[in-house]
Image 1 (cartoon, rainbow, N blue to C red):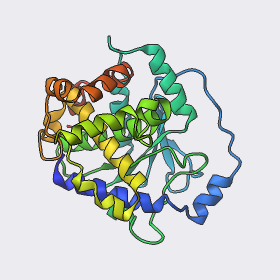
Image 2: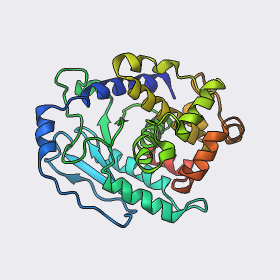
Image 3: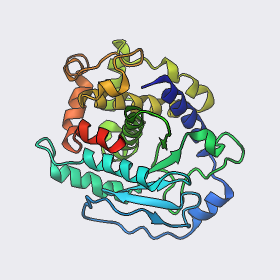
Length: 296
């Protein structure tokens, strides 16, 4: 990952940690409304239309794809939102490795848990996220408050590879840090003895994953924030290496020193086992040429 985008990610995260710690009056009012959540029992593997809905505070458009809701801030183009949805959909393509019963269970629970992704434009500075109060609401409300991580940013004047890197990284953060943490005990980053944390410890101890750049999170956030961020970053690196996407993120580099699936399998057996037993049975590597074509 290019240093520019790493810095924006950390800035976004610091600001979101402070924002989401205490909701604005408007967010509290919206969250406190009686909301009937319709539970689903069947997976819906489709891409919907962009819907305009002013009841979701500053996120007045949304798009549903495969049982996850994508909320869209002003200035973001509908075209970009559809591209993000397309990437998520490509991750769920049929493959010989997929356990369809497990995948459908994951999709249903993701929908029922109101897991969501947020999209913004050109980075956190545009929305004055460091001001008090910030320029936009932290969350859409109406039940969509807790189960999310960071933004995906639509950028101008970046290469297709840079924009692809942004989209895939933050989709994977939402999948592993929220949806999988709710679905699988092995992915629960809050449990220090979970498999994802044991796998990360193995990577840190071997000098493969360097977490030093995240130390400031303890200062500006909390140890829980630090634990979550390092776990989802580690999972992201492991997955993109397993997918043969190392070239998109200029791997290997100082933060993550492995760049091939074979290295990962040999050097980080705990993570590779976790990946094979869960993630790889639900998601598949999106075809790189198809993803690049989306963003050209």
